[in-house]
Each structure stands twice: as structure tokens, then as C-alpha cells.
Image 1 (cartoon, rainbow, N blue to C red):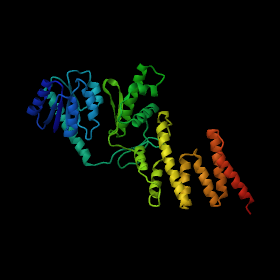
Image 2: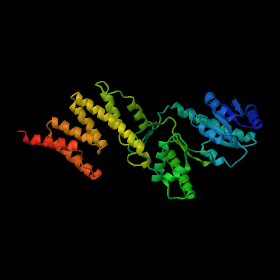
Image 3: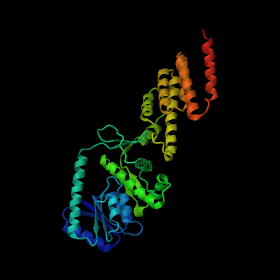
Image 4: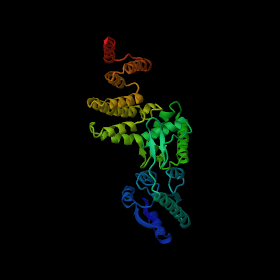
Length: 383
């Protein structure tokens, strides 16, 4: 097993290296660094199995380094080595393998190495199975999809736990300070009570993720309790993947029309749409506009190609997902008129009027009402 040691004090660094190399079998020290920033770069380059980290260092603490190392792929195991026991809780919140007090004792170190061997063996057994990654679905409502299983909505202990998870997922891999989180979820609480509520809710989220086998998604706490970060590693997130596919589309043609349809169908609802979180509205509207633009482009192409059934299908989907967007009603009215389906034209217009008046308290635009009245006059006068 390969190890890197990090401690700004030379003597403890050399002592730990000597004990590991002389008295512990199966450990190879491939680097010992007193410069923590250099150590971060070397961990990325050398990819050790374990990093022994001092906590109290100038400029950047071992806890902060530990947070950065957890984002590496693959991430090394972390053992904190320090002369102070007050950081133990913070260390284990970072999912550290172990926490050793200075001066390092051989028997205590051997227990750590045995735990390291067990951890690596367990991870190797899991990796042999080569399971696909977890997927998190954000369209409409939060769902998780484990390997070889159908997507499922998990039951959160509280609505606040679900919203905090969603907010941290929205800002994934970024540290969000606790004051921002408290102001978002408990705006009427004083800071002390808000901190308690936040700690409890983070605990509930961790327990829920663990209960459902979602250990690859983790929440870590910043140094000196500055805030929290949700790390997702290589998890698939449907909204992110959908946007990547959508932005790669060229204008619709006969050759890529089916690709358009598949990408439109991948969008199963607005971003966190079921929960209507105000903080997600900008992203929700941005993705909604992108989807609508793709749908309108494909609809126009189908109409130009005289593929009326395909155009109808696209606009029906548009209406199903976004019932307050009038374009789909107007296009369907025209398509049904061309097909001679008078009842369907009437139905579309009445549906649009009722929805706009009830939901928006706003009349239908003059362009649509003028077209409809002209169509009715022509229909009535027709023999």
C-alpha cells in the first residue's frame, strides 16, 4: 500500500516515516511533504492509497486538504495525525479512515493499518463487480436509480431535509456557508436555533442516503464549520445530461428528427417542478425555455415537411408538459383545421381560454382570438 505523509513540522514527519518503513509491513512511503500545497499536487500525481495528514498547518489546515482530496478520482483514504483531540468530530465528519494522536504509538498505528487493509480489500471486492453509477433525477421530482433497479422516490424524514438536499445538489461540489442555508430554510429562527436545525437536518439526510445505499453521494462540513458541500463524484444527473444532449443538437432534419424526439421525451417535467422551490426558479425557467425552443423548432420542421401527425404529437407533448404556453394550442388548432377536425379546433380554443382565464386571469391574445373567429365564420358559411 502506497502512503503519502503531510506535516509542516519536520521531526514528526520523519518520525512517522521511520515508524511506517521500519516497523509496519506492507506500507511504502512514496512521499513526505512539509508543504501542504505541494502535497495536494503530488497526491493527484502519485495516487496513493492513504494520506497521513497533520491538521494544524499554516495557510491551509489538514481538514481543508482532506476535503479537496475527497474530490479526487480515485480518492485516497485519509488518516489525520494531530496533537489535539478537539478536531476528532470534524475529522470523522469528513469520513476519515482514522484519527491518531501525536506522538504516534506503534500499536495504535498498526491498528490503523489493519483497518486500512480491510477498507481497501472491501473496495476492491466492490470494484470487481463493476456496477454502473447511481443516477439522480431532478426533472419534476427527486428520484434515485441504483444499479439494475427502477428509479424510485425515497421518503425523506422532513420536507426541510428534502429541500436542503435539493439545494446542495443544485450547488453540488461547492461549499455553501451555514448562514445562507439557515436564512433559506429557517429565516425566522435566531442563529443558535438555526444552527441546531441545520445540524439535525444534515444528519437526517446522511442517514437517509445511507439507508438507501447512496453512499457515493456525501455531505462534508467545511473547516471551522463554515458550511456544507454535497459531493456527488461520478453520479449521473438527468438535468445536466439532458442539457448536454440538447445543446449538441443541430437544426432539425429528416436524419435527426427522431433524436430530437428522444431528447424531448427525456425531459419528464420541470426542474424540481413538483416542489416549486423559489431558489430553483431561474434554473427551472432556463431549462424550460431550452426545451420549448427545441420543441417549437421540431414542430416547425414537421409542418414545413407536411408531416402533420408528427407535428401534432410534438405539440401535444408541449401542451402536456407546459399547459400555459399558448403556442401549442394555436398550432394544434391550425393542424386540426387543416385535417377538417372542427370539434378538436373548438376543444383546443375552449381549453386555452379556460386555462388562461383561470390560471393567469388574462384573455387570449388577439392574434389567436382573431384567427379563431375568422375560422368559425368560414366554417359556418361553408356548405
